[in-house]
Length: 285
Image (tube, rainbow, N blue to C red):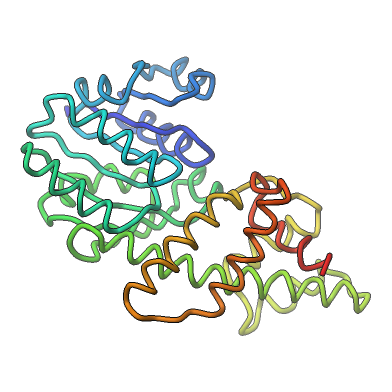
């Protein structure tokens, strides 16, 4: 049986690691804050004090951390171990160019590498229904598939390393437009004196129906702005998408507008709120 490792136990990672532990009965874990891991440890997960130690004691290692700098730090640490024959799967949303760089480094050391960012938020992570966007070699994807299936429902191999991240950028660009449309729609409906729950129930059955409306609309109505996905992490994603689009010679004005609005919220100390809190920012305009 392959030994599994998991690094990063945040809003999504903790649930994802839990599914792997529940299905395969073993997992080696590390997070900067050990307190986040206590319930997994109680269920049988093995705690290690560094990413390097997880890599040394695991055959397949999953990571989902915060920022590109975190990805570089974690993979720099793990590269100090003997990693030949191991498979590394980065599920962080990060820069495609960074994943390609890491894949080359790890392949030179005899290891496999997959970039596999996810979509579905905290709900998708809890329910093991994530969309998983994979870039890498076919043989590595096949080796990882049963583990992906423990965490997600829609698993696609999009091409070589970097393809998963490019697909995730397309996903985030689409979400950016959806979130501003959702927020403006509900602000308008509220100002018109409508019952927002009834509005959501009505328009969700027509052409405006979408995942964000179904999942974030009720949270907005209930004043729940806790994070399924934090604003500060979405700002990071949008900045990557804007940078990548500019490298391609593209101008994406809608994305740039939404990024500015969210960045202003982050500067106002709202970066740890969920992305649905854009409703509040639009209300204040």
